[in-house]
Image (cartoon, rainbow, N blue to C red):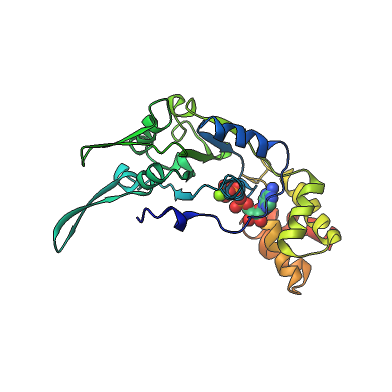
Length: 267
Ligand SMILES: Nc1ncnc2c1ncn2[C@@H]1O[C@H](COP(=O)(O)OP(=O)(O)OP(=O)(O)O)[C@@H](O)[C@H]1O
Ligand SMILES: [Mg+2]
């Protein structure tokens, strides 16, 4: 990975509508260089918030999507073979630590324990990253910060962060915004009028009440934005809602019927 910090700068302000005092709290956390954990359901604005904060704080942003096949080497780097022999290549976490980026580890719980522990020395007073294979101890740039995202709904006993990981972070709780704010976001993001955005949010609220009664997760703000984008393009509102608010979230025929009925009361 290239170490040119400019490449990771967020150039244009990402639209983010503050819901509470999360911007001020995050800023204070960053100034104290406290690693941050963003908790909340899928599609509620966590990633957008990080992009916005990286822009606001004028820090490069390196995002790493975690998965269970990810190894410590994928994060810190490895030796590569090329025509001149072997050459060390920094992984994204190492680059972030060197250039003073905000490093966003998305869906951290997906990673295996032996991978997650490599962030431990970076997320306490040491702020170092040992590259064991290379025999180098990288001292994190003073501006470096780790941010992780975490969806509390998905966790099982088998798949959860260890307390020794959790207790290295300050945490901000995210959730779907209050109806008036969510409608404002949907209207802005999708380019639909306020009335349509409000209807979409009301549909979402009804669907969210079904969480735990046949639905595993609430209807995300992201899906409302999808629905709004289709409607803004002239797609029939009911068809748009079925495609974006009903079909993606359940395969259960009765549940789909129930959701379509909700849609029909608004459009
Ligand atoms: N407060 C907000 N301000 C602006 N846009 C928002 C806000 N909340 C949600 N959105 C919209 O919702 C979409 C989804 O948000 P985002 O991708 O940040 O979700 P997420 O919480 O990171 O989800 P996941 O856990 O699935 O990655 C964004 O693309 C944006 O359009
Ligand atoms: Mg995200």
